[in-house]
Length: 168
Picture 1: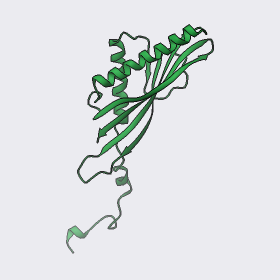
Picture 2: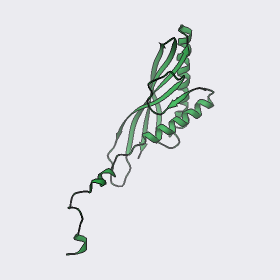
Picture 3: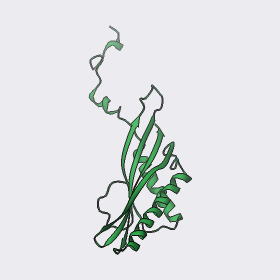
Picture 4: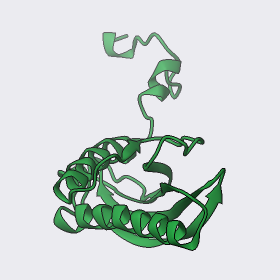
């Protein structure tokens, strides 16, 4: 018998730790970090100050102006041997822009502030759709919301979605 026939595990079975090395990869964490940084830079360039950016869901919008980069829903094409595959996903987010008061004037100010913040997000993606080369292409595709009253203040509240194509 030649030495190449000597095996430590049965033919056709993988050691248990080998399966762990075949995990799916994703650009979502990289994009989330790069987008948060790029939006912060754009907000400063646009003169919009006092906005906190969270890369993960936060339930208390009482901290002032807030952007949350939330849920990602993704699909991947099957990998070919030695090749790359496409990853497509939508990254959802929310904007909260509170203004003290309870009149229609404050409601309009809160809504305007939320759309001003959204404009910075759109400018970020328009100026660099690769988000610092973290993905192939990203763009703002949907948004909407309203001003709602919470504890003696109006909050301009918008939800948005960024569609992403990446090659991994």
